[in-house]
Image 1 (tube, rainbow, N blue to C red):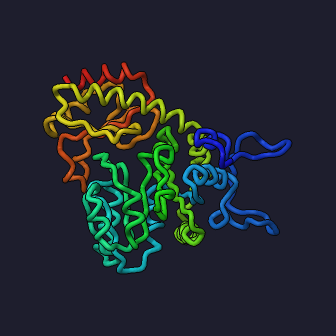
Image 2 (cartoon, rainbow, N blue to C red):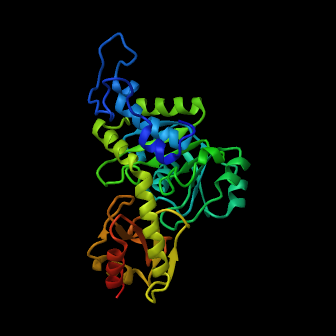
Image 3 (cartoon, rainbow, N blue to C red):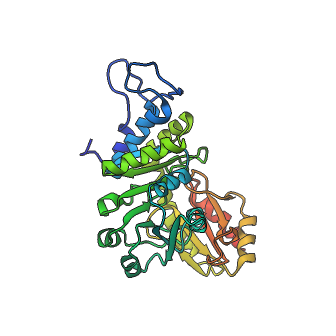
Amino acid sequence: MDDWTPRTRAIAAGRPHGPGEPLTTPIVATSTFEAGGDAVYARSDGTATWAAFEEVVGSLEGGTAVAFASGVATLSAVLDSLPVGSTVAVPSFSYAVTRGALKHAQQVGRLTVTELEPTDTQAWLDCDADLLWLESPTNPTLDVMDIETIARGTRGRVVVDNTFATSLHQQPLSLGADIVVHSATKLIGGHSDLLLGVAVAAEQTLVDELRAARTRVGATPGALETWLALRGLRTLPVRLAEQTRTAELLVSRLAEHPAVTKVRYPGFGMMVAFEVADADAADKVCASVRLIRPATSLGGVESLMERRAWLPGEERVPPGLIRFSVGLEDPEDLWRDLLTALG
């Protein structure tokens, strides 16, 4: 399997093998197992559906994967391993829920949190935090962080949120990161129909920590959700390639539109952010689209957009910034929708 491309591994890994075995991994819906085997209880031992999903994600990221009930559950499990009083650095522009969880941990006296500019690599090297939570590209400003320089130049544990890039565009473990996390709700699932998270580590001690945290708090993924995420993962390479082509086309056109003051695009992937004059103008754009749906999420087959600054904790985001998740619709239909909305 190591000599297969990521596209092939996404399809071929994590499948049953042998005469009479099903071609696809089935939904294993059970909470307990008959005594005498390797598995006793699903919360601690998992199921064949979990194992298949984790095998594929681990193969793509170059480590061992541990699935969780949601992306936030994954975040909580990583933070749960830190001793009280630990210091954490996080990008000032990053997923609002991540910063919200860290803010709460600081308010209750559990952690000390420092926010750093995502692209100020020297500040990250100088921060001396116990845990460095990196996000690249950042949400929603799409800044690209220097993962390798930071990971190899700091003493702290380095965690990378790889939700936007996915393992198809970067493998942070190979760059020196300790843990990679995903909201599998997004691109991995790909159809806006599940909640799931996953963490990946190369060192067995970290894998054991993650599994223990999942068992301790019961942040276990559902059978149907895991199966749906596995099915979505099979088509991630072809979905992302097509979405990226459309994103690149729309970025070039948005950059020339007189109503657009700035376009943010990291140079890869299907996430785009663009700015218009102010909050009112952005709200009008989001209210005027017909094909693109105004909604809070990303990574599905359907295109979504929203003005991010309306959310609590996103006050630093430019008021006219619109986060745009490019889907699989015809690019010309999307462009006509954007033209009408932009006036």
